[in-house]
Length: 87
Image 1 (cartoon, one colour):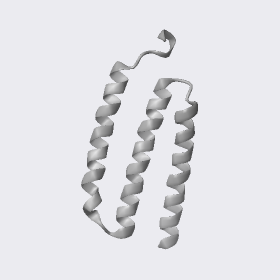
Image 2: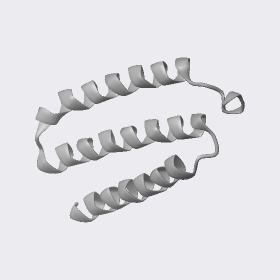
Image 3: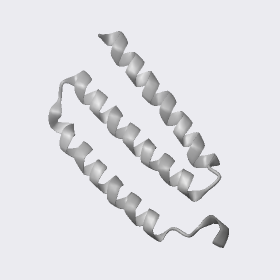
């Protein structure tokens, strides 16, 4: 089972690195917004993986809180963002 946890952690780490690249190099602000959402989702998956490895469920409410804040933040940024061609 340790091999499965290690593979899952490595996949999450590689995905986070690729997402960080998209945040830094994204051609538009909307690409950066989506990449930031994906990065937060990957962090939540990492927390869930840690909770599964350690068999500790006290982190689950914080995962739910992070998801809620991420959703509201994404809505706010998407609503008030300036188009790239209007800058």
